[in-house]
Amino acid sequence: MALFVTEHTHPADHCPAGNPAMAAGLLQIVTPANAKARGISIHGEAVVKGRHHLYLIVDGPSEEAVRGYFAPFGQLGTLHVAPATPCEQVVRQGHC
Image (cartoon, rainbow, N blue to C red; front, side, top):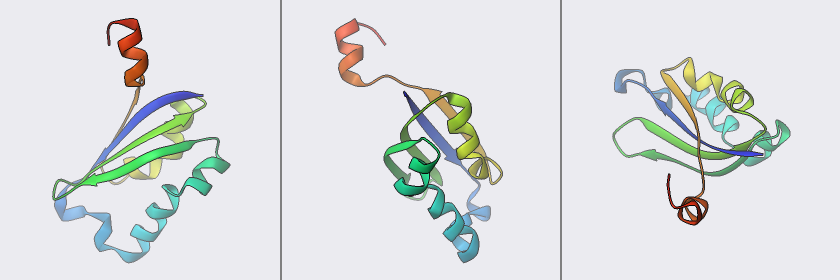
């Protein structure tokens, strides 16, 4: 398993939270049980207030697998998946 930070953004005028059916479907993607069924562990998720940015910290088998699982978010705006390292490991190595 590898660590990733995933970021989704969308325009305010196309916010999926305003569409009950779409919002319910997206919420199902970020449930730990559904992600686990696809080999992904969600450590945390949050939306920045008023900015239409969703961040997730996840473990997954590969960047491709994480990107594929969260692909529906990319259809509604942008989706960025970046390999990451825990802070403790960065400090031990002495660099980012």
